[in-house]
Image (cartoon, rainbow, N blue to C red; front, side):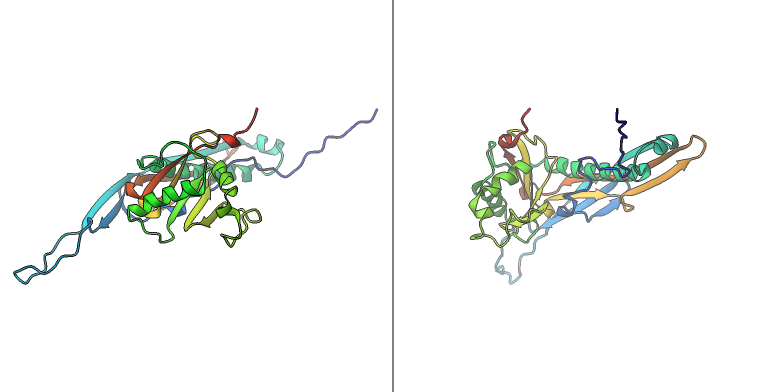
Length: 275
């Protein structure tokens, strides 16, 4: 009888999960830190109209419309701990795995925090429907009618199913309309119709007939973080003989301009996994 030997791969294989923030660079991060609060200032003319000189020979003056929005910072942490025997007896680099997973956990939380801020928006495209050129243009027109500038800072966070439906749209996939070949090059972020599209794996309702996607301008949503930003700690406890890795961040998000955000309820049920 042959005695087979079990072979173990020394290198760890990363499990499937989001490990980096996909959307923080699409929101406003500048503001003023005050204690545990981060204050964003939003200013405009208040829809002022140009005036002519008055009969007294003077030009009427007005004040600008300035509002302040406060995001309260909340502390978020992820801590993983393993005994030295556990690390010694396990495959792969256990300490490296701990560092990678805590970083990934906090980065996912960062996106969840921004998505929570976006969810407070009230403008929508109506009932759920499948992605199409018309649906994208509908959301874009809502922003345009609100005087949101097409300055390269409009982004759309979409589900994998939304992206898949767009791939079936001639105006999205045909070289008669675009320069890039989407079936050849499918990055996580891509630009189409003047909008930066980001395929996100963790939107609310993903894989259902009610996926919540968004189109918004960078100045419509703010994300605040402590000046130290994301911090990490890696160490070893000699007394208890264990290693640990911790990642922490103090952050908060705030809706700044409701007129610059559109919720898109998408029917992604065509691409739901089958049991």
